Structures are given as structure tokens and as C-alpha cells.
Image (tube, helix red, strand yellow):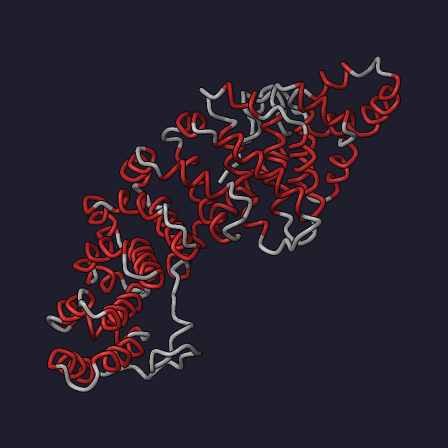
Length: 454
């Protein structure tokens, strides 16, 4: 998006074609990455259990033959040896794709496993849950669909007897939702949204992170805008997501990151952003950015970009909502500008993509809004903005657009009579803005470039 309203600035023909070509390349790469990510976005809880069920690093067993799988199932049913050890051997075998496929082809195999999963013995139930979890991590859609009979039990056990068990059920559900349309279609009438709405009130960080993972997988589904997001918005989930995102990282970075991305997916759907705004999403996210900016020099910032990125995108997209005129009033806080420039300065070298995200938000904040354009001047931020012009062609267009296509020129005029700013304004206008305008403004017939916001 170049601006929140119809654009007066239009790039020249060469710049426009360059942006379009770059956009096509980026979209192609994103589509390819999304296809590949269907395999790698699944999560596997395996690192803390060895073959004896004790803490430690597990060494995967060799793949099992069909006869070995069949014998293990028979022995488990007959109660031979210790059933937990038998299930542990099966679980290790199920780490291999070929064993997974052999398992689901065997008649009655899932019935036996689900019977053990619903056992009244906690240790047997946990080991069976780990077997289901290994199956959920398969890249074969047929394996995921073979797990369909287990989904109702997985939902029931979200109120399980231990945090570890609940966490395992959550990640298994999330993995299955990634792989199979049939699984998602079954989960909705089984009540996954109400189950998650109940589960989100858990005080346990591991459970909340797992819940965020499940929800993010559901919200990214093709059918999410019509089938899933309306149900989410009608529940208590959004209010709790806002609470958890704004918890000042008391629950850890993971929880905030998971639910920030969930909010991003909901906002990008444009299903009912007015509801989110009425629930305070704008002020919540602004205050979060201010808080993050204030702690950057005091605490470790590794992974902070994963939280800042979806928050910036949420605010940028909310500002382009047609019915959200009240949205910009809530963001008339010049401290947000300082936070954006701090992020750009801090992440420029290691995470330059975040600079573009900050500039998209700055672009939408300054759309027909003299308040923020004037604040850029009074806070002496324009020189820092102009220094970004040398970073890349994309950043150059964005940075120049923030002033040339918005209310920046009007803000400059307002400060012409200010003795402290007059000379600076004149120098900046002559040195930077006029040359930039000459190179970027095209003929009136050119069409504005529209870039993807997500």
C-alpha cells in the first residue's frame, strides 16, 4: 500500500516497472516458500524423552518392518512385557516415514493406538499420545487423515491431567491442521474453537505457546476468512490474545510472538477489524511497541524482530480500513515515531526487512495527517529518515513517499515561520526533497504501485 487513501504520488515509468517486477519475483518466492513451509512449519516435541521414558537425548531406532509393527501391536493388545516399553519402541519406529505408512495401512492399527490413548493409565496414555504426535508430523497427507478418529479425543484431553500431556495434544492438533483439509473440516464441528477459548485461560506458558501454534495454523488456512475467523471473533479468544500480547513479556517471548502473528492473520483477513478496534487492539499494540522500544537497550533483543514484525503489520493494515477513521486518533502519539526510528536504526544491519515494515507503518501514519508529518520535523527525525535513502531502491521510494505523497509538504510550510526550523526546513527542502520529487514524480497518467502488505 502506498498510502491510506488514493495516491497523489506516482513513481515514474521505470520505477513502477521495477517495483512490479520485484513484486512478481517476491510473490513467486513467497508462494514457493509457503509450499515448502507446509512440511517444515510442523513442530515436534521429542527432545526430552529417550527409549526408557527418561530425560535425555533420544537416538532414533531403525525403521520397522510391517511384520514388526504388527507384532508390536499384538503384544501391546495381549499385555505382553511392559506395554509402555512396547509403545516406546513403536514411537521410535514411527519417526521414519516408511514405518508411518506401514502403520496406517495395517487394518485396526489406529483403533488399537486410540484405545491406548484413551487408557486410564497415565503413563500408557502419554506414550500413546507420543505415537500420535509422531504420526502428526508426517509429510504424507494419508497419514494425517488416518489420524481423523483421534481428533475428538485430542480436543477432550486439552483439559488433561498434566501440562506436558495438554501441550502434546495441542501440537499434535496443530500438525494435523497444517496437513489436511479434512482434519480442519472435522475439527470445527467438533468444537475446536470453544476448546481453545477455554484452554487460553491456562496459566501455563507451555500450554499457551502450543495453543498459539494451533490457532496460527487454523488462521492461515485457505478457508479461514469464511469458516474459521468468524468463529474466533465470536469467542473470547481475541480479548485473551490482546491480553497475552501486551503482557510485557512476563510469560516469555514465545507466547507474545505466537499471538501477535495470530492477530496479524485475523487483521489481514479484513473479516471484522472494527470489532478488534473496539476491543482496543490499536492502543494495545502501540503501547507494546513503546514498551519494546524502551527495553531494547536494557535487555537481550534476540528474536525481538519476530514480535515487532507482526505488530507493525497489524497497525499498518488497520490504518487502511475504510471504516476506521477513529483509528488514527488513537495513534496520535509522537512517541510511536521515536520507537519506529529506534527500530530502524537498531535492526538496519541484521534485519533490514524490519526497516521496510517500519516505513510502511510510517507511510500510513502520515497519510493526510499533518500531526505526524509535523512531529517528524519537531522531533528532528527527518535527517534520520533521509539517511535511509542510500539503503536500497525500495527504502528510497518508501522514505521519499512518506513526505512527498502525504502531508509532509504541508507540514514544511507550517514551520517556515519558525526561526529554529526555518533554515533547516529550507535546506532539507532544497537539498533532499526537491531532487527526490523531480526523480520520483511521474506524469499524471501513471498508475500507483500497490505492494503486498503481508
